[in-house]
Length: 292
Ligand SMILES: [Zn+2]
Image 1 (cartoon, rainbow, N blue to C red):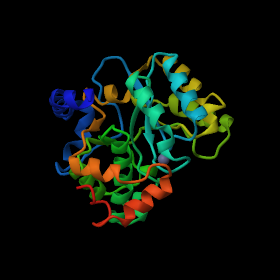
Image 2 (cartoon, rainbow, N blue to C red):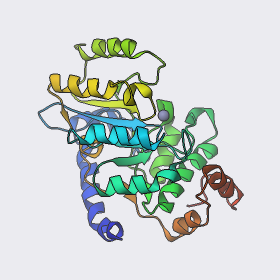
Image 3 (cartoon, helix red, strand yellow):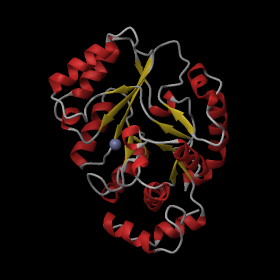
Image 4 (cartoon, rainbow, N blue to C red):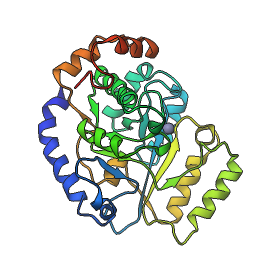
């Protein structure tokens, strides 16, 4: 309720922030990006003198244990993690609807979209990819949150058509990364730390860092990779900012759904993610366009 009533006020802040960001130095690379495409972001556009970093974690929610570990690891330092969640990847997102709403409400965690089932966007049809992102939009709408504004491409794989579609669907940015944590490369912690140490002492290291991590990986949750990143960033004088701050963005994370979207979302079963997707596929209308 509060969200809906504050949306109008917040959306004007959002418009200002996004247009302001297009004038920032880090956005210059994007200046050639056609205006019919969503912003494609790989680094913080923060103009603060102090170097900043942020970490966004993909592919979850894997389990309550993994999610809580990450949230606590950030919160105990006064940081807020950003999760690019999937609907049906390691586990079914509906199981965590209370967790997501609770952490959002208390400012403990922030959320965006990593699509429904983690496809490589360039390996499937545009229509199938739109279905994948629409399923997660409807899931978030069903949870009472709305349509997500921020998306991260699985594997970073995409083309211009995807950026156009994201813009049409009301997304504000595709947020990728400029520092891989290597946590999903199937390497040992020792190997990962050695690769990271090399990156972090390179003269080419960007001033600001936008990290790719995964909530689902043992090296993050059980073996202390996140702690290494936090400590090393501190050593390099980089201050943690949350993802919206990294993007100079002050608005909401979700757009209010239309009545049609709300109705669609409410008629799909949410006890099981496979049943949710199967019921969606039975609805009349083209794939990925049913809610529009
Ligand atoms: Zn992923």
